[in-house]
Amino acid sequence: MVGEFKPCANYLGDNSPASSVPTIEPSQCHLGCAKKKRAATHMDIQQQEDILSQQEAVLSQQKAILAQQKAILFA
Image (cartoon, rainbow, N blue to C red; front, side, top):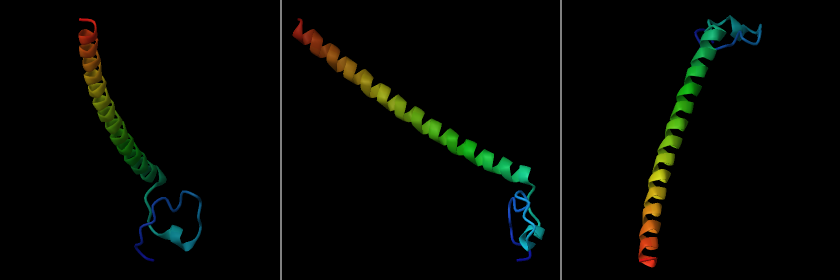
C-alpha cells in the first residue's frame, strides 16, 4: 500500500495504517471536488440555456404561423 493515493484519508480522523500514506490536505481535496461540481453545474446550465433558446425559436415560429392563419381567416 506504499505510495497508494488516498485523497482526504485523514479527513475523518482515520488512524488506520492507510492514513499514514501521504494524502492531499482536506481543503485541497474539497477544493478539487468543488471545482468539478462547478464545472458540471456550468455544463448543465449551458445545456439548459441551449434548450431554452431552441424552445424560444420554436415558439417564435409557432407565433408566426398563428399570425398567418389569423390573417388568412380574417382577411
